[in-house]
Image (cartoon, rainbow, N blue to C red; front, side, top):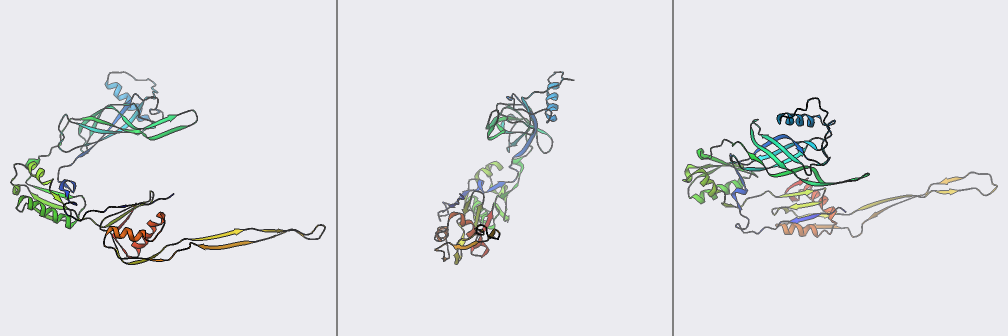
Length: 364
């Protein structure tokens, strides 16, 4: 049954209750992570590895690793089923230092059935500039399970992908001199002029001087020297915990696959009338066969007989949805229609098309 879950987010009207830390609203220019990627080999699988005939790249990397370890395998016909070629990905966090450890994700790229119980062999991880910034190795924790019999196989989750907690060690640092910055930009994750103005005002109020200025809806420029902080890091540490109440767009998000509807607190409805009902068209064919009397001259005749009817759901009338000024009134007005949950999405679409729903309508 197609079910609709209507989530009503009723937020308090006080400014303090709706305030959010600045670190959760903006990104600090230059303070970001970097993506890493590597190509490696997983060993120790229980017969669920790559078929080397279908995955020649697995055999190639395995031979290269064995040769580096001093094992001569020239001319050998290797057909193991306990190895798999994988792609290893990780995110190098900002200000990661040599020797610190980060998590890695391991994903099979061949025809391996599962990485459960496998061990990743030492794999260098490169950034976009081609330099090696970390080296990964360790036992994989796969997020799935496989049960296989003679005639059937059951798979739960994704056993061909897993993680290695703290599985990579940082070998190179990102060159970024935070202390030398004289200005810094704050980028809003959801650009909005009202929110940017409030952030500017909150920062200037915190330092009691003009240290921040709004450049556009998504950027606030910060004068580090004007903060009179000991260092740039001290200034950021003081700024990131400032509370600001963001201004959000009125938005309705609909997921048609799961039937989920999420409404923001700023959604409004204009006064509108809605009629919702179902028509059922039913056609039945019941042909009648007519036969002549015994020993009479004649032929069997099929007489068509069609029954057609249109049924309309009873009790359907034109309902008025009053103008709403709060989310609770919007929900109450929609629920007053008395419709089934599966029809709620169609009603919201029609309200948006009629110009009565004053919100951004997002369908996923």
